[in-house]
Image (tube, rainbow, N blue to C red):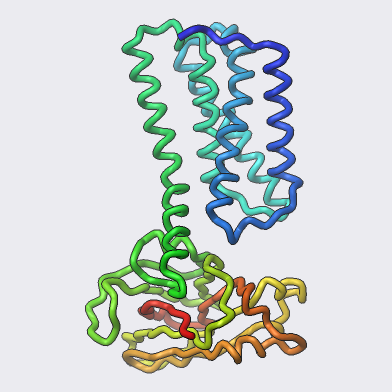
Length: 319
């Protein structure tokens, strides 16, 4: 491998690219949370940013440091992980969520930038280079697995709509934000509902236990009902709550009167839930809900004194 050289032009290009990516990460105010495919390509920017940073650091400093390969590799991992963690911490103060996965991408990007710029690696035998770059390729592929899983799930959403939740793939669990619950897909052993899997939700004790789904096709206009079934294995009835809101809801300060709130009393055994979307549309006190911009569907329990389990069938919109 021919040893790379760092020119003034390449430094300028790397710094310019880094500046653009830093601006996008910290200051560019765009909501991509409901387009997860775009969000994954956005996250890929962590790899590109750290590839450039560690290419510069390797060519300017590590190659001249006199450290052996193991020390250089350790420095790359530590610096990438620490700076990546710091960035995530700072991001949390700008209204963005912290993500350990982003730190993993930072480390992978740093290792790629180092590997393609390292003088030590360029001087190794061909066999050693094959081993190093093969391991790096495997690490790169593994790091992209969560991205691929989410992209796969988004494609499945579009293919299965108007089914909101199909319970076919474990990747669907990535659509939920969990609070004091446990989610899993389990084998359907019941004859009352179709499908091979059911969504099992364990609601824990506490003030609130919620499964918040904010990833689905938002245009519910043209449909009349949302239907699903829930199985309560307990011998006692217990209450769940269903909340639905559109994207404009947050402009009201998350006002309780500006969304659809509906209690679901689950008797023992199977319960059929039919939500009339006309009622959802008329639920806000001072306006009509935008049915083409539905933003969140949340199922939650409040003030449970004992843990409860519920099994959910497919959720489907019907005309």
